Image 1 (tube, rainbow, N blue to C red):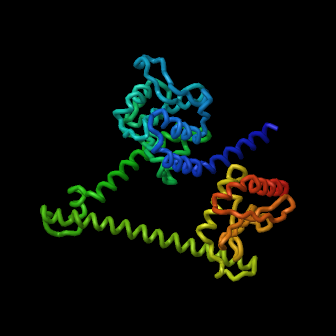
Image 2: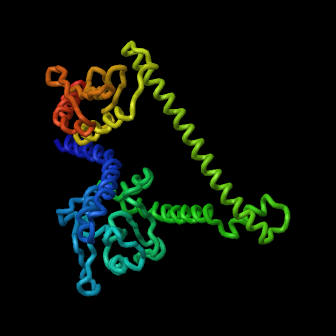
Length: 379
């Protein structure tokens, strides 16, 4: 019984962490939509920062997980508190100082974090306005918070690699030693990126001279330096553009090959000519809506699609005998075909893709029915 529970808990944890990227992306979209109506620090905490803490796996209403208005009785200025402390084994592990989302973030307005950092067992602190998050530790001097953050991101514009780094702070993954081991690398890479960006858009004389001396045989006078400053800027811009173009070409070639294979496979299954099947942007959007509806009920990797000439099928386990629904979006009228317990087709007319959400219950029921069947087959 114990082994079964451990296995079940592990599977639940893995499933949740697979969705972490989607959850953070959704939070970023929420911030963009609401920020113009969030006018105070307290509103920023409630609308942006508490949901962020929740997505890190902490129960914001459980004092064993999160302590708001945290105070350490260690001689700190009376009445001063940290907005949140994330807890583990009754000790703070991450301190969070919050500002209104319109406030700029800098070391000067993190004085409370700085004072509390060396007075608690917390190894990490976060300064945030609900949009930008700055993570600090003590790389320079032990038990003294660094003046520069080792990890910075904008939740409304997060890169995949940043989400992977953030995942290390999730309650299910949190490992102080592992994070500290990568913090130094993150810090210096971040600073190098900033430096590279500055030097390639507004190159310093030393930077220009470094390249000029390698391609120009004469003396680098001020006139030559001015000339090469412009040339260096243009060359880097062209280089980056060429690199992006080449990357896109490679990605498009791979996607075309993948689409061709999918179309060929569908032609073999349906007998329909593959050159008549065109997957539209609207169909993909419909697929993503169905995927978002089902992601909390079944593993998202089990949701697939196959496009046919007359409909767009969304499948369980990429099995055409396990159709969750079919989308018909090409004509003047749009339909979602769902299925009852006896697999009888039900034709549902929709006015827009948003109407798919009205069919959430039947879609979830159908998908769960296939999952139960699939689990029995495995056993």
